[in-house]
Each structure stands twice: as C-alpha cells, then as structure tokens.
Image (tube, rainbow, N blue to C red):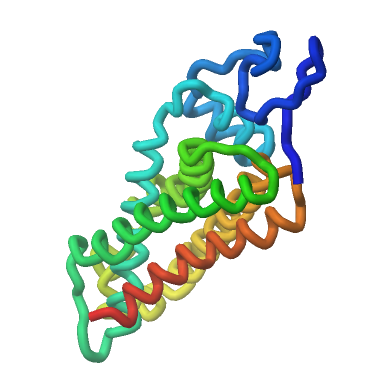
Length: 234
C-alpha cells in the first residue's frame, strides 16, 4: 500500500503531506497555508476525498478544535437522549453534564486513539502519516453532525422542548410525524459521517477495501462505545 507524491525534478517518492521534496527540495504541490472553514464545509459534501487531502496538506489546521468541541457536544446530546430513552422506566432526566462525560469526553478520547492507531497501522503497511492529520480529517468528518446540531437542535427545542432529550414523554408520542422526520434526517447525517470516515481514510491510503473496512470499524467503534457508556454504564 502506497500513497506518495513523486517529485517531478528528481523522481523521489515523498509522503503525501509533504510540500517540498526531501531529496532536492523542489516544490511538490501548491502550498495550502490555511483552511477556509465555510468552503471546506461545502466541499466536504460533494468532494470529500479532495477536501480531506486539502485538510491534510494545510499547514494550519484551522477550526479543528472548534469542530472537535461541536461534534463532542453533539455526541453529548445524543448520549443524553440514549440515557433517557433506554432507561425511561427506571432512571430518567439525566443531566447534560452526565451526557457530556459519557458522550463528548468518550468521543474526544476515542477519536484521538483511533487517529493514533491508524497512523501506526498505516506506517506498518507502508504509508507515512501524522497523527495531527488523521485527527483533523476525522474531526472534520463530524461536520454533518455539526450541521444537525446547529440547524436541527433549535427545531427540536421549538417542537418538543426538553422532552426531545428527556423522553418523558417520548417525542414519538407527542408529535410522531415530526419526530420521525427529524430522526430520519439525523440518521442520514450519521450515515454520511460514517462515509466521511471511509473517504478520509482513503485520502491517506488510496486503498479502497482497506479504507472501507478500517473507516467503518473506527466509526462504529466510537459510536458503539458512546452507546454502551450511555445505556449500560450507570
């Protein structure tokens, strides 16, 4: 497995994130200093692989901390919903702080571990990479979830108030059509996040099967852990 930039001057193969050749110091590609946040959001929906490559090659990983915190907050809300929905008969009205610990913190820890593991595995398979690149592109893969946080959450509050998060009573009982429609949109965005995990891995490795397997394993491991901690850990 290989993903390199070939120097047009000396023919040396360089790591895909390099700007200049390690052999002759010639420029390998156009320089990307900063990321345009809104442009990146737009392009990640219709050109995810190229966008992931741009994120990797950017010298400054703009807004990666912001994306990480927003995605972590979204997982906190998901965790809060899961806690109340699956324990409605015994434990309800869990606090947002508990959701942040079981959703947001778990996400931040696991996304870092996943990026670290991927760097190690990729290196063993012949692809040189950096943890900060993997961490940034996987964090940016959460943009669909961030969009639901910024757009759908106010709608959820407007329609259901706190009951969307406490499930006491269930929104599916209060306004079933609206609740189902919102859940479908949420589900589509979660699936798109999984797709971005795969395309982000492909941007590093250029191997379709490997990216499909490891990207999905990483995504489901993270979401599965959040589900486990939210529902089964009291």
